[in-house]
Image (cartoon, rainbow, N blue to C red; front, top):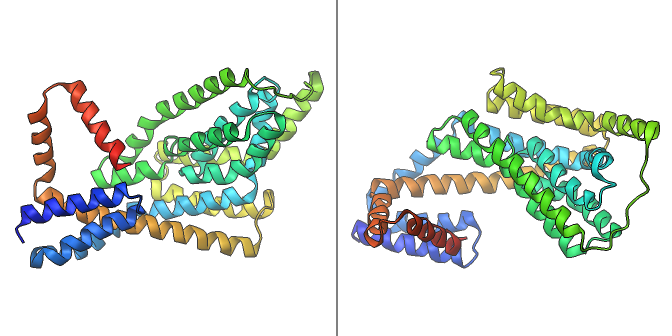
Length: 334
């Protein structure tokens, strides 16, 4: 089969699998399998190239951050963070929604993953928001949307993978998402405060004076181990003390005693269960990365990106229309 025809069929197969909602690892794996079976000897060495790339030490921080985030999620830090943030904005109308957005941002800075925010805050926040008067659908949507802050607030697993694949400085990737992450957190909070006016919320009695200060200090002390984790990780990376991989290892080691002895949400049985779940998630991610690397390398060698760019410029030269076409393509794929 001619290589041009092979690439065309592979791309059609990939888009078809993506639009059918097939899990991402199987989408890229299916397209790569077809290309490997139909491509002849020219594709046989790609597996060894991909395995060589996936053993890069930089990528080791991905499973370590996922493991650390899973440990912190199960340890009970979410409740202490929610209680602490709730001291400042919990008595404001719509303040509990702000607590959800800010807590997901903080947990994102701990775990580097969007899934951890949902797993850690959802079971606690959604029933509490519903009890205060928020519609359950709204509360679920807010927590789910706020969980994407884990992809923006450093350390972000997505940014680590992007920096590794594109050979961009991971520190620069982290710095580039701090501003947008804070901005999105503020926007979510403002939008929530506007929407909260429509709900018949039942607020707790406000605490004043020394009682409020005592409550703030008590909850702040309980939340301190969790709040210290982002400073340890990001301070070590930005200060040049640790590489992202070393910071991920420190995060995983730090999460174990905090979960067992500080928040006491972990036990031996739960620890092994979390390790198993984290290993499953890491396996899925690493397989997807491997298939994506191999498939993208083949497409780059066959100059497919250049052909797509040339085709799009042949349709229009307008920057606005080009951006619209790209977003329409991404919308169909997503």
